[in-house]
Length: 269
Ligand code: GLN
Image (cartoon, rainbow, N blue to C red):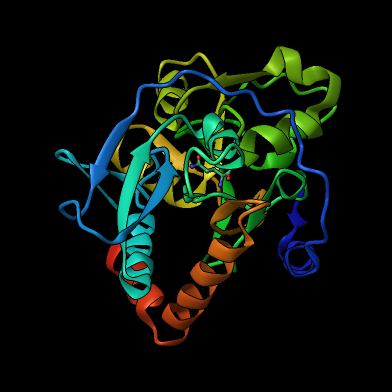
């Protein structure tokens, strides 16, 4: 089963009518790591909430958070004459943190979904994602349809509250409680696959490649599950910042900066 959301979501983003802000997001206490990319200055500060375990979009290189999102955010901040501060929190807490104004924006390889659009606004999309399926090398699972088959009983690992989690839980319906295990990070889900606790992991394609490259005995299925748009999220009340960021981002897309950042981290196939 495959859903193409890109067009619907692009339209939804443009339309972006005033919808009541959702209130279903739970705030949780998380350990935060704050990394200022420049010494404190008189410039305005731009705080970006992310979850830095999503290579190549955001990950640690030593103490520093690097990746496509970190570089694009830095280029946006530079254009706006602002000082970027990246805060590492759980993925599940990003939307709530942005909604309450604790962070100016959320950038975490985050997919635009209709559900999230009820809670936050999104920028122009700057990258595409695909939900892929990781299995063990000798797995009998050949496609997502094998997992979704009526009489199948395969167990699936996902990262909590990601679109992989949302789609498979939705598609499996009543069977999801029994068959889907939510992990705090993609890394934990992949470790569960390696140790045989789950039969497949559903996760975005670029982190999937990183995990498979780093773990023996795993492969990514050729078939795609869902195709998506990544964008930056803002509180619905913060249209001023969203418009400024969008203007900068659109220039960076147009002049090729975003593409060169993506190419720097994703080796052309
Ligand atoms: N693209 C997925 C989502 O938005 C996963 C993002 C992530 O894990 N950082 O849900």
